Image 1 (cartoon, rainbow, N blue to C red):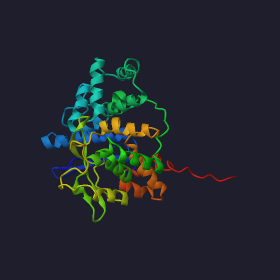
Image 2 (image 1 turned 180 degrees about the horizontal axis):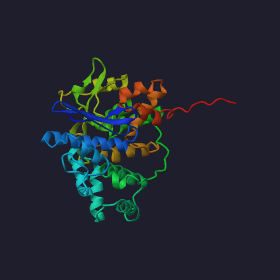
Image 3 (image 1 turned 90 degrees about the vertical axis):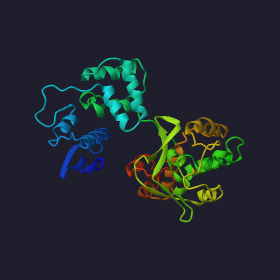
Image 4 (image 1 turned 30 degrees about the vertical axis):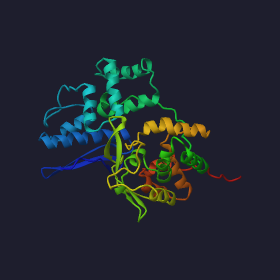
Length: 358
């Protein structure tokens, strides 16, 4: 049996699977609601686990009740008169067993520090208020934790909202700034080692973890293509300890190699298929945190260029692709973005639209 994946069904989210030659499905929430979609994705993991250990509820009653915020340990039958949830910490720890997420880990620490049971919506509001009063958390941090809590305990946290004021989006680097950065790195006494890596980021739009994990087997210099289907992501939040994973979206894509990247790659000593293309000076996987805090910050400061995160190389690439005339669909195929994200965040970010004179 394959793991369950959430699909789009009209405007709703759908789980569909087969167990012991019988087909089942559950429809839930709105497709555009990321919290509702995440809740159904989490339920899919619970159903998959139940099927593997022979505890699947063929009536689906257990799973429909869970979606409504009710935990039911029985196998079918009527709705229980009293429902008992495991502690919030236990529910989030179950998420961590599936996939490590630093936000989940941090939320567990906050719940332990809070030290009070959260059993009612009033308790839930009190916890969210504590995050403001005692921990002084920014709205963006509280929203991130609330999204997790609404997935695991929608009955308690479903009505709570955190408003976040929209901030100006970081500007992509101009072509002139990109040239300045690359020329500076090329001539740098201390950081020339990272010139090729950052040139790749600017010219391909790869996610940092994808570029760090790039192996020679992923590169076809004859066809001038980079094949992206995995990354070297952080292991339990550590930037220095990494594990090979699928891409963020789990999708395979082909990134064309332009002349800048081609000329750089053919001049690099080619290793074995499994060797990393880019490493630290000591031959280890690149630590993007150290790279950002030392090389990247100093480069922008010395050039008097407004600071933007290293990840903005990806934003810059996508923005200039669109400005060059590529369609959002074409850009998404190269970068692995959702087309909707490109429309919302990248269109018009490089070149302002010219308005008519009336």
